[in-house]
Image (cartoon, rainbow, N blue to C red):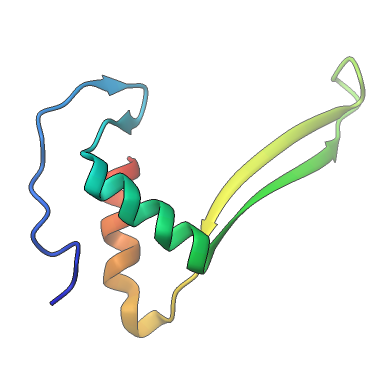
Length: 79
């Protein structure tokens, strides 16, 4: 059985697009990020910025296409 299969949606607070989820789900997402993800920061040259660069950050999860259901679940949690 998949650990995220029994997740129930809480009617928690919202701030922007990030939903506050229970500690178990947060721990699962953190573990998945640790194992199959990364946090990236890029410097993008921009002439219209004061210092000439934009800092672009991304959180990326990697998964085999046969297990894409976990990626859809993550997207639902983070939207």
